[in-house]
Amino acid sequence: MGRLPLIIFLSVFLLIFDYYCYRAILSVFKKWSPKTKKIFTILWWTYTFGLVIGIFAGIYLNIYLSLRAVIMVAFFLTVVCKVAMLPFLLIDDLRRGVIKLLRLKKKNQKTEKSLAMATNGAEPISRSAFLVKAGMLTAAVPLTSLTWGIAYGAYDYKIKRQKLILPNLPKAFDGVKMAQISDVHSGSFYNRKAVLGGVEMLLGEKPDFIFFTGDLVNDKTDEMRNYQDIFAKLKAPLGVYSTLGNHDYGDYHYGRGPSAAKAKNLQDLIKTHELMGWDLLMNEHRRLKVDGEEIGILGIENWGMGRFPKYGRMDLAVKDTDDLPVKLLLSHDPSHWRGQVLEKYPQIDAMFSGHTHGMQFGVRTKDFQWSPVQYIYKEWAGLYQEQHQQLYVNVGYGFLGYPGRVGILPEITIFELKRT
Image 1 (cartoon, rainbow, N blue to C red):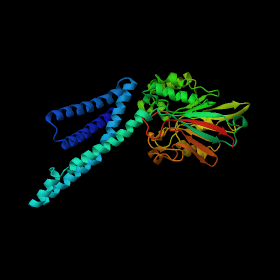
Image 2 (cartoon, rainbow, N blue to C red):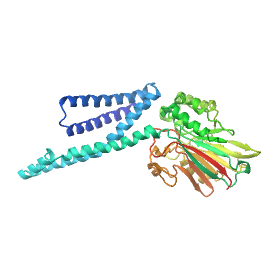
Image 3 (cartoon, rainbow, N blue to C red):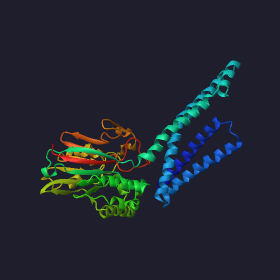
Image 4 (cartoon, one colour):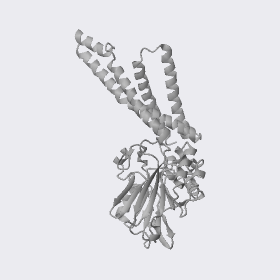
């Protein structure tokens, strides 16, 4: 119930915002017949109130995940488009406000006549109509691109190939192939066939072992109900190793404090990893052996800078690993690399993360990448190196919030381990 006041406040704010946009559109299309205006009004407010009710139902009622996804898509697109219109509407209101002030100061007939022409439609198109229509046209731009991102970007899995040079790598591991996926966020999915297609794409690469670097769900373990069988198909000769992300603990649903329901949800999630055959590393390590030679696979619980939880215990994960020539770390949040690993754990050769999603929006080519998320995270996509330590950030398999991707497509990373 703690979220209810905030949700009510946001709903009221959005209804007021909606009314503002509604009045602006009607002011432009004054020539509509009464019947047309009535139909427009009914459709506008039926959609708006239906959307608000749908949001409450999606949060508080046990509705189908696919229906919840449709509601969230509609809500996201509606808000983005209306926000795009807002600057034009505010400019128009400001312009008209200035004109009214000038009218109060200037009473002569000439000024009144010129002002009347500016506001009463004597021009071929009034400034108000121009600004509102420009706002509507501007709103169509994000609507088009974001709709494309939902229809085509959300499940357009791309394989990223990366050579990972580890000078101390034992000879037996030279040329070994490793795969990484991250940030499944199963509660956001609405297309089982597409999700299965991505898993089959990964399996087609025939990796020797696989990493999953956290955020299997959005909030609750039961989000995996329709997808557990799909991800259980992920198998590799040397194993599948996983860790937890910030969303996996249920903090965003149950709150940060302890509760019986939250503890059970986490235990159910741990059991889900086990049932899928994934080796979940909770502040611990494994010894990966090939032809008598070993490297270390370390995994910690979520550890993030700022507001993100620090459940991870590196001191436990590195215990009894001094003899291992190479140590690979699974840690969901890339800020952990600078926040702790670089400074205190120089024995970590490479760390593998996710978390950023590349903000699911931006530009990514072979030689160039940009996303607004780079102003939040210094390391947000791809390979980074400082001295002998490396970090790879996978931009994620799934999506959260915005149910699509534009430019930053879902990623399956295939690494080739090399000595030189």
